Amino acid sequence: MIQFISEVNWLGILAAFIAYSVLGALWFTLFFKKQYAKSLGKENEKLQNSAPVFFIGPAVCSLLITITSSLLMHALEIDSYAEGLEFALIVGVGYLFSNTVNIAINPNMPKPIPYGLISGFFHLVGILIVCTILVAMG
Image 1 (cartoon, one colour):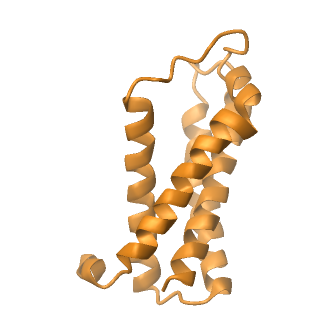
Image 2 (image 1 turned 135 degrees about the vertical axis):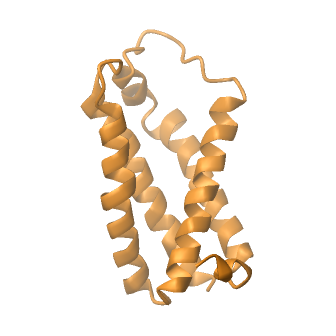
């Protein structure tokens, strides 16, 4: 599958990655800011998330998810919106959402289910956007 690395649309990957990253910024700082802080048990505190790792880490992960999705979609010859949606739902629910919820369920997370749902749905919506852009840009 690595042989497809030169065949994927890197502009499509860049556009999808940017969209995924912008969604993440909006999701956690605007759309679900209060719910996210509450799920972390920090509803009365300012989140300490200004260090570079809190921006670079998620960006690298989103880029890897986007590249991997593009490679898999190319290998599976997914080129219609219906197939892209199906792929996004399978990957989104089967890997991204479920893994995010699983990571949240640990004794160090004050409110694991709300955190898992907020973060899991971010990844589900994100992969739907990524796959839509990748199909649109071929």
